[in-house]
Image (cartoon, rainbow, N blue to C red; front, side, top):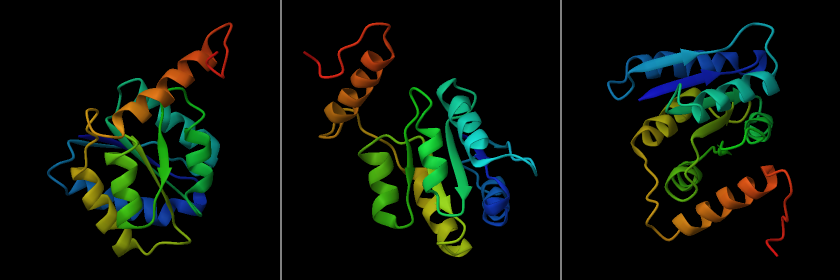
Length: 157
């Protein structure tokens, strides 16, 4: 699995810890760190989301102070599904239920050891499109396609 990872300055410590963790994991074939000292959370989030949506990476991890800003920014990229998660239940649901390709974490709200445990679980999780959440994810994708169409009716009428 190719994982893109990135953060602005207020997430760099946890991002660096997770980058090292991922680089030692046999499930990960490539870690793509797109961080720079001056990058903003919107820029790193959008770049990571585009890399995933365009096929340059399989999944992404974004780290900021809370994980909320990176999720909001990444979700602006059509086709991206980013989720903020700080516990096992939300990490599992983000992938298995909602097919989130980007995991957003907050350096100010989660300890590195626990973040590594969440990423460890996250690497094994998969979405089953034939499961009960499959139709809901397809509904979201269809709405997004209509919203991006030149003339659209977002209510579906």
